[in-house]
Length: 236
Image (cartoon, rainbow, N blue to C red; front, top):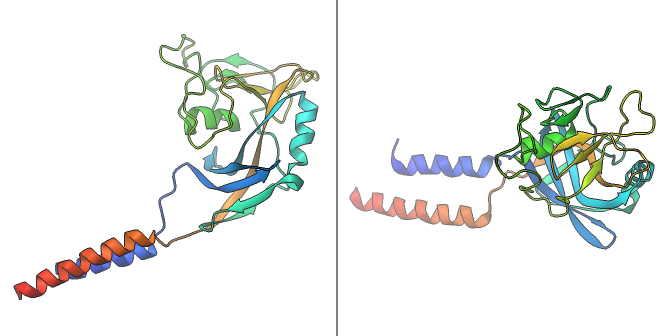
């Protein structure tokens, strides 16, 4: 195969192949209250595809935060990028889910409460996707490097000092609900009357992704291909 044929093949591949998706991808924005907030696709949150709305609802009790997020859809105007198309699997936005059961505190990520838990939606986002550290390592030792919400990725409105409600309550604790602390990476169970922040997530699938590369990329590649073709002719 000569060089021109090889480059032609590469150009065809470039034109027909899609981008490699990272774990977190901004697929558009949603207008809420007159401002635009990123819609960030998490393509594998414990095996589930979810979309985060990069908006933080100010401190409120658990019931009010649940009511806020369940009615959020009516207040949003979507601006999905042309490269993407979304199929929602949840009927409405919701507070994030976490592991359920009795409250058991631990450090190694296998318990329902404590640190390094990645089996919950916020915990997975915090530890796995954004690569942040909790204030204790998996052995229960104090963190030796910076911990908390240091890395935000495309998120702008997550509060590094914020404590965010989950959607459910621990078993046997009718007056408490699960929550996650961004300052230290801990899952815990505050009283439902406390004021904690709210964030919205929704299960959904990205069903089509643009396969066309940037026009400038194709143009530059084409110029290079033609130049090489000219050089090859001169050698014949």
